[in-house]
Image 1 (cartoon, helix red, strand yellow):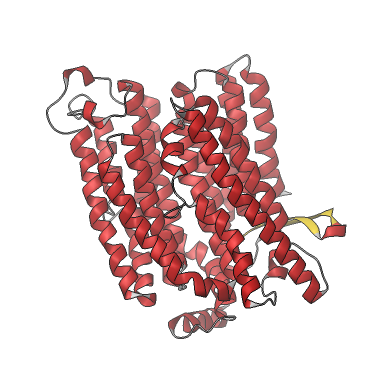
Image 2 (tube, helix red, strand yellow):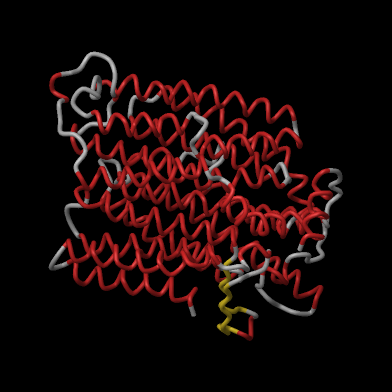
Length: 507
């Protein structure tokens, strides 16, 4: 019952936070902190289980739901989902702490929406039944809509509706594809089920496979997002409160990357191989286009939003390189980007609380009055540009090294993005913290609570950069399993099959 208990704790805690929040904002926050901390304590011991590296589920829960339709409650945990779940609870806990000063009304309802969003994200990372996966996919969207529309900035309504329409449309197309593969598998195998393991390997025609994959891509590529489907992102990220942006950028975008690795590629291997050149083109375009737009922004939060969009292009390139090295880089990018970009959005929120503006033209020379905040800005700006010793460097190095095996051209073009990220990262430091100080911007430095939050995030990004092997070891079996399913059904040759053959022999 461990896995359903994790989700249930957050759902029940959200209800209690809503009720108690009418009397005490502090009590509502304490309930959220307690719930997320308990969930984190529950899962941490699983990193020390001897079965983590076996490639099999080491924690699993099954229950019947609608047996007549082949729908069941199937939750499972392996090394990859364990990493994703740890990131979710870690970022969720920070989001609660960040919301203390920014959320000034309806505290209980805010904590309710925050916890239910995190519960939905947790369900996405744990679901093995496709119907259940879709259920949690929708669960995380609705409360996020309320977070943006009720507690966001000036244009929050427009941003919230744009976010909801884009993501809901993609989700509905994925539902159509889920129903499609359910019917195709049932008609060919004689068994109607939504189980991922059963549906993997379903025999289908080339056209059918492409059409069914398109539905999944509609949901995943919008949420990631990719070039041409990204227009909701700058508005949603900019207008959300800092805690909401933290969840959007650090967690919700990562559910799309996880969905591509866990679902889209194994379920539709041949269609994925055909789509790879398009995906890598979109990834490279997103990297370069997003970086140029980031440099052009005058709104600090919007600049960070476009930088996030740019870095997600590396994820797409890594996934469609179809080799283990690139996949390890993708997992690292999910974690490192979640920490570093999340920290930059927190810094932007802290500056807004002090200055009541996000305009770079009104920020200059802040290092003199805010040296601690400036130091945090320096560390995470260096993380964004991929400084060795920090987690982002490991992620981008692994992705590009893996991409070179697949396509030298796309890897070379993506490498240009590293130069562009250096330019806009240094621009942040120059515009905000250096230069001649504007007298009206003298404000207090980080408080003790803010210093603790930032110190934890610095420790996280440094540890992932200096000790990457535990992350790689935990994710490797699940990544090899996904690649093994793909390679066995496609005409891939060379290093990929060699690696997977050696992995099979070891296991």
